[in-house]
Amino acid sequence: MARKDLLDIASLHREEIEFLLDQSTSFKKLFTRSVKKIPALEGKSVLMLFYEASTRTHSSFEVAAKRLSAEVTNFDVAHSSISKGESVRETIETLQAMRTDYIVVRHSHPGLPGMIARQTTASVINAGDGAHEHPTQALLDAFTIKEKFPDPRGKKVLIIGDILHSRVARSTSTLLQKLGVEVAYLGPGSLVPKYVPATIRRFTDYEAAMAWAPDVVYLLRVQMERQDVQFFPSLREYHRVYGITNTRLAEISDRGLYIMHPGPVNRGVELCDAVMDYERSLITNQVENGISIRMAVLDWLTPGGEFPKQESYTAPHRASSSAIIP
Image (cartoon, rainbow, N blue to C red):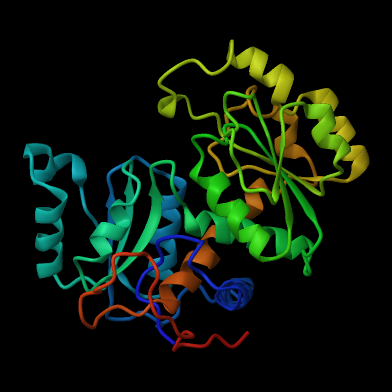
């Protein structure tokens, strides 16, 4: 079964998620054998359409595409006709004429990757749309957790921080629950949505959240650029109440908990400097695993065919045509 686009996590079936995680494992094994490039997407083109600045996600997709032997084109939004008032629709018509096979989209407007997907035969990958979704981040998070817990069912992940504005929190919590992981949110009352799914616990007190006994503590970046009002007194106060301080890190170490963060890290806000040297910090693992996951996604999607007729994100799907032999 084929899937043209990857726009969200909610529409993915568990078997699709497991397939992508398994493929990512195979791709990662290739790297350990110094196989840096394979011809899976030779002759295919990948267009990077980033309306928002990004370093980790952009570079990860670019490296992934090149390791699959695809040609990569970076669309310079700042110097394109978009800056002269060209609409997204006009831009997509131009890109469609280029016959690109994949479009990786990052935009501040929720739902825009889905709109683009409905206007092109290229496979569209959502690399982050506003505070809505970030599916490949969720997949790499799950992959990183599964490396430590091969069967993650029943494990507990505590997501701390700016839940309200976080597309990572939405996508990652949705995917982890599909894998049987228990999820809880912790943050200031102003930054934890009042209404969350009944299956997700909601904490505003750090000690109460830790009493829940999580296996993984996942820190979110405080997104000041998405906060149009002040949601807490100061960054220093946020670190004291919700951040991983040196004292809290010692407690986490004693309990053998893992720490994750999607990056970039605001040191002294979400976590103290010592976390970067903590032996159970998985932050570097997440960066490395991002390449494997994005290779798996690019290899799995099937561009081409008729323009999609449906208005929703859901699309038909099938297994990848290029199996990886570890």
